[in-house]
Length: 507
Image 1: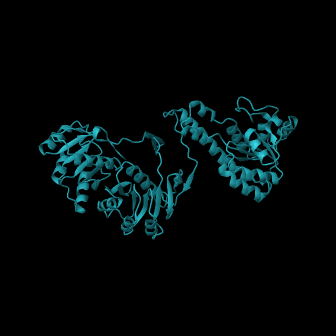
Image 2 (image 1 turned 90 degrees about the vertical axis):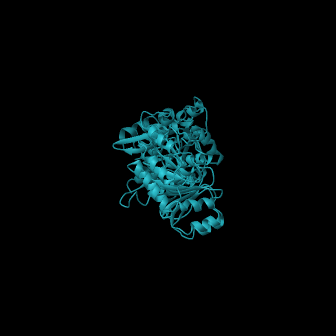
Image 3 (image 1 turned 45 degrees about the horizontal axis):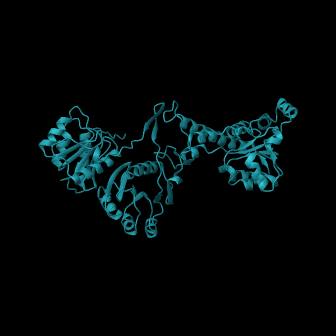
């Protein structure tokens, strides 16, 4: 092949030496000259392999506390000169610039240093200058140079060196260059977002791990997930996770994270159709399923406690897509894995980002994540009758669910069990009627139940309908110019109502 280039000289300068030894030994076996710096040079010498110091080429030592080692015309000239360009060849010969055909480099761990809570000065020192410049230079000149910019590429490099015995094709070099620019842009994005202090002038996000999905929301749409699911879940078994599975999984994790008692939830189309907290996870499952056993078909199940064998036996009776839990008893896994397509996930936990974004028109909208969880002290009683302790517990319980339910949303709860919900309606009255109808369809007695609304009531009609259905207490944000209409109706009907002052729309 005309575009094959033989590697004669390589520059190696890495912060993390993990996995480097096999590459160095292979380079030596292929009689490729190795140039290196500082700690990397000492590491290579420790392998009893000959290495040339960068200082011997540049005639300059590492200076300014290691900030300047490779930034020199003889190094960057060796990477950047064009091998088919007569003037470049002339100047390389004139200034005794050695050709460098392979660059192996990584970057200081800026993101990990920030996450560790290090000082500002320590973070500054982890902004790589020489490394990022080497990456960009080598990637720019991919016509002649192969750039390896991460230890994640080491296995691919070893395979390439063995297969082609120290030669590379243009296709090889361009592929590695593309990955290098992805890495360098990600690195710069992380630095920018750190220094913008949560208020960036430009929208910049970068995730370098991706997973192709079977398809998008529908089979005629392509779908890709950018992120690292392995950090959050261990996948025990099941088919590939789909685009729609991911949406439901995200909604499920966000919802159940707000409950500390043993809790089980069933979700469909990002909304809870069943949820209960009970003394045991088995009891929670029974009552969560009872909330809407019809919608549970093909749903996503999530528990915040270990799944035992008894619970697994009951779960095994229905068809579902995904189950998520922090752990499973061995016997429960044997039961759940009887159907091979079921996606079984162990949830490891993670810290969600503080900000959310989505594409819109010709741009992106960004907002702070809704992390507000109301507690008893946040409630303002606005009626003559104060809610009883059990009503307060149910009101707060319902409010957590309605926060994660598509607007317009109404949630009905009784004894810490979701008994009815109205989701995604164009009017709050329709949402309430839907919630009451669902509760009655599944034979729930609404006498003594509570109601949560994701936004205020503009009229008293909603509380009137709720009262006639048997509901005795209401939680809502308040803030309507006609709040008093609802308050007066509650007072005349011996209902309790509390305001939170916080709206939880979810669109």
